[in-house]
Each structure stands twice: as C-alpha cells, then as structure tokens.
Amino acid sequence: MKYSGWPTPGELVVGRVDEIEDFGVFVDLEEYENKRGLVHVSEVASGWIKNVRDHVNTDQMVVCKVLDVDESAQQVDLSIKDVNDHQRSDKIQEWKNDQKADKWMEIAFGEELGDDDFRRIANELIEKHGSLYAGFEQAAIHGPEALENTDLDDEEVDAIVGTARENVSVPYVTVTGYVDLEAPGGNGVEDVREALSAAEGNGEIPDEVDLDVTYVGSPEYRIRVQAPNYKTAEDQLEASAGRARESIESLGGSADFHRERRTDEE
Image (tube, rainbow, N blue to C red; front, side):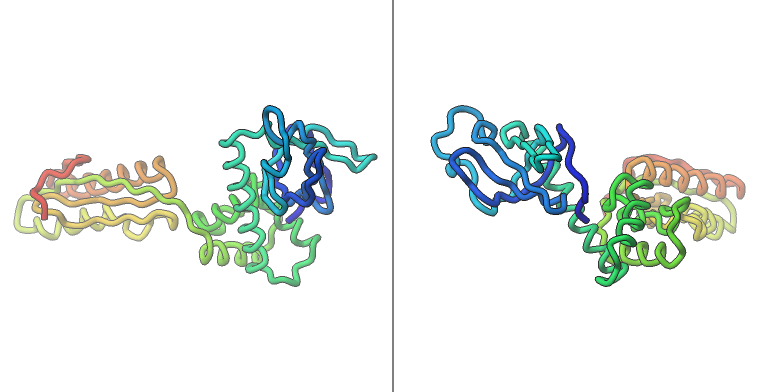
C-alpha cells in the first residue's frame, strides 16, 4: 500500500535511485504514489564528493531523511548522509514488513480487492496495532481476539486470521521450570496424574501458548512453555506450577517448584 499524500520533514523514507546527475540524485519514493525526491550532492555523503557515482548507483535502494517538502513545486528535498546505519537498517526492515503485509492482504482478500476496501481494512489494523504488519502478527498470535473493537466484519476477521496463521512467522520465547510432585498412600500415582493434568491446564491454555509437562525422573517433572513474549511465558509457567501444587496438596501430597533440574541427565 502506497500513501497518496506527501512525506513530512524529518521522516525517513525508502527510495530507489532513478537518475544520477553531477548536482545530485533523483530518488523514486517507494512508499508514496508518484512521488520523487532530490538528494543534492552535498547531502549524498559527508565530506567533499568528487563523483556522485562513487557513492550511489542507479536502481540502488536507499533510505533518506526528508529535509523539506514544497507541494506547490512538487519538490521533496532529501538527505542520505543524515541517516545512520541503525536508522537505515530499521527503516529497511519496516519497509520489508510492509511489503509482506501487502502480500498477505492480497492472499486474504484476492487481487480484485479495490483500493478503497484495501485502505479501509488496512486502516483498521493500523489504528488497532500501529501497522499493517503488526495487525497480521497479532492476529496470528491471538486470533479473532486481536481484531476485537474494530469495524471489520466476521468474514474479514476470519480472512485475516486464517491468512496470518498460515503465513506469519511469529517470534516465540521458551521458558522451563520443574516441579517435584509427591503423594503418599495407595492412590499416589493417580493423585500425581491428576496434578499433572491440572498443570497442563485441562484444555484451558490460551491459543498463543504451547505448554508441555513431561516426566524427568521421580519425583521431578519438566514444565516447558512457549509463548510470544517472556511475560506471558513466565506467567503461564508459574500458573502451571501453581495448579499442580494446589491439586496435589488438596489430596494430601506436596509440590516443590524450582527452575533448575535436579535429577541426573536422561
């Protein structure tokens, strides 16, 4: 999706070098419809420049800072030298993410989706999550819940969630803890099994969380949680151990949660 308006001074933009002259470089702005900017030779690189072509090539992708915009003259003044390596890397990644999100919109709604509907749907995601890419990412993690309180209809929500879960690679973190479960008496095995079922959540774990409880060595069990962020992962890990403790203690047993493994290696 390209913007129909103009960039603003101070904004970082992605462009493709279209034409190189001795006095500067003409850049087609990739994020704006039919907009072109000029990087004066003094803004191409720091220091004295003998030949502009020593610093940029035709068709090269560049990140520029917008210095000034004159809409009446259809002129955008840009700088390449005012963009540091960190800004350049972040902006290129943001632009690549936007390209991916545009493709996901096409997958979700087809190539025949009109510009007005594209912008309407995209704006709902941007308003809710800050960017089109983030909207799809959150839909992949949280499902329809991520699109609550938007003006999208059920079919549009289903299309976004389905596409997101098929195409978006969600970053996950993994945390691990251990719980020792002991239950006296003749029903000890069944009591531990019930506590393990409680630890696993009895089918009530959020969709974005993968929680697994495995046997390590009597009386130790490993709880492994994979989630979109550390806070969620840690919260789910502690909740799992808490459920196991509550269950086993209600049956007269005991539980001890710890972060490091105690039994010998398998």
